[in-house]
Length: 140
Length: 127
Length: 197
Image (cartoon, rainbow over all chains, first blue to last red; front, side):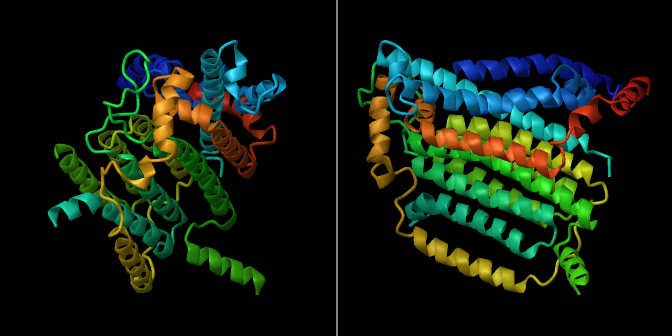
């Protein structure tokens, strides 16, 4: 891939922007269009671009597949865990009103946590699936 | 009449796309093509839902500026179908990935992705 | 009116692209056209006031799904073209019959963009009225997704998680295989090759 100088330079320029865009969509999703699902996909798209241009090996050096496996379950755990916490606080499953003193702040916090869980799971699962597909390339 | 056609055009395109997808799944022998057909079918359902949520003269369901509640002078598109389809899209791509994984395994096991050849190989190994 | 025209034109493009996707026999071309199809779908969603959905479709359909299909194709180097298919007559009859029945069903449907349909009353109207006030979040799609329909979303996330798990299981990645193979000497040598070449 080193021959493709333009591709490499543009990718290096674009990848940080894509990752930043992913984070922006994640944390700004409450105010504008966006949210966990989109953010996760955009974030993983940036990393997949890195893997496509510089090789999967380089990507898995910085983010081992083991970490991806842990993260994809961690997101689900964060989501469901938020529900369990609200149950421990005496409410129903996923009733965010109880997470803070006032209901609106509680909703804010709950939605933030849940969207974060969604984002983590989506991003890591998409990367994981891509890693599995690309890894098998040329092994048959 | 023109009004009727324009107002139902979306649904008809959706049905056409649906049928294109179904036709691909039924008539094409190649498994990857079948997955693409399923995806076209799926997308047609997305468009149907979003069409139902559309309101003429409405706006995107995001409150502009400070949150003061809806005074009723702004018409918002129905956010409920958006929510349903938003999750369906991401779930759709994960199931597509699973289908592709199965296709790769089938190719490894049978050496072909043509449905007829796979069936023939199965029958030969049975008989 | 202009929205309706743009929308109809985009839908016509979509139909043409869909037919092209199905008719093309070369798989690589077909997959690339499918990426275009997804991008067109995303623009239709924008016209139909679904910004969040368009966002997702553009990132997922035109981005990730295409890349995954290309990765799968790269894994199947021998599969370039599909074989001539068999008899097309009966599938066509079946599909036409179903299509005609479905179109007959749409005659009673409320017009596109009509504000007084059943879909806009009931729970949807309540969401629009209450969601920004109760959650303090301007984006109603986010608040419905995460709060009012949180359980639903939890199920969807579980489906994504399970699909990832399924891919790992099907392609044998659950064994130490993936990680170790990627980090093994083999990966390293191919990487250095890339750098020297």
